[in-house]
Image (tube, rainbow, N blue to C red; front, side, top):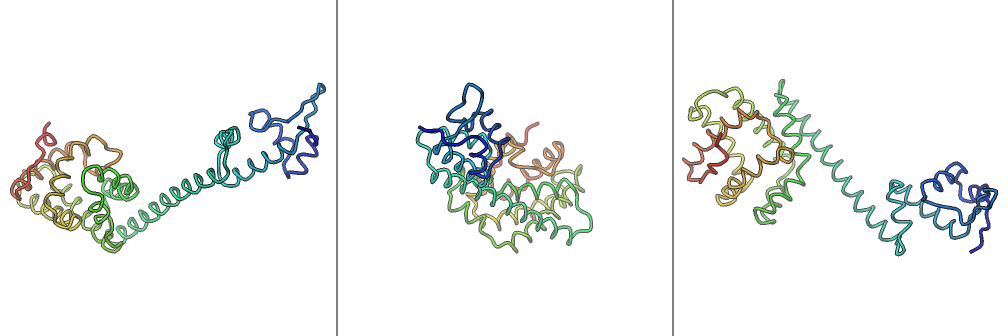
Length: 258
């Protein structure tokens, strides 16, 4: 393999800089084909191809660490790396779309309410942003087609349901401390369950499956962000238990324990 280019010639030919080439050599990303006893660096046509790959991958957004992994693979494939990068970018695009959607919902709620409890507001926004993770979790409990149906409601309807949820949660927080069996408390629990029914298509079995998984939800506060404090959650669980038993559901007793 002939080393045809000095480092200056190689930098000029590739549109790079001598400083960059020294750095790539230092980190082991692209080493010269030949280094003379005096320390002069020379590069080959094969190095030229390798640098073109590095530049292409940098342009596509790969970090140098990931580029190094690709470059040093014996069976390195540009097509495979592009396919992988496209998948990564599509995921980032979905994340950005979720953030934009969450902001739209936030602005809608701010327009409808002069004052919004920050904990409720943050909870609703986080749950919008975590929608994909929620869907994957739900698919482990209920059939995939039912999960997709739950999340296929029109955006306008989702805005409306989020607004109703905000109102219900806000009023529940105001009533915290009353007897969980209190008529006002139970009415609000009923309002919330109407939203759940609307979301699930009034599927009793589906709701029961979700209730049975309540403990797992509590064990993962990052995935399922709650707007209620620990004490409010205990109070709300008792109120929910009273309502659900009246409706014929079997409530998960363990979730209501101290």
